[in-house]
Image (cartoon, rainbow, N blue to C red; front, side, top):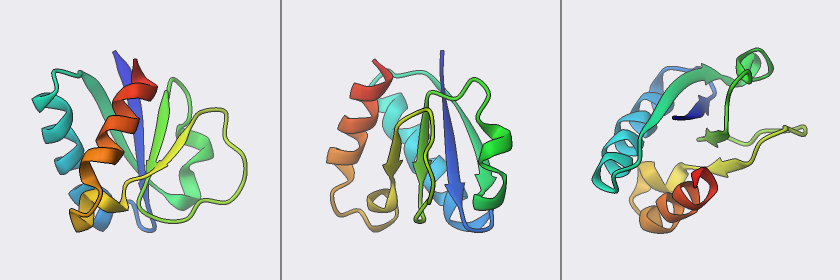
Length: 91
């Protein structure tokens, strides 16, 4: 099973909305993934075992896994393209 780290500024608000939409979309596509939430300040400490970072905010720095902006999951604009990209990375 793959692991996705969902990141937002506080680790509560927009990441929760993104997690809910991401779970629904991945389930619809038959993709199983563990989803973890955190804030921008604790990304480094939450990377163990993570296959992808899905972020609702800008992240600076370099990470050992792909980073995908999931703002479209909040706006509904470009949502399918983001889910396609995430599924492709996880496969």
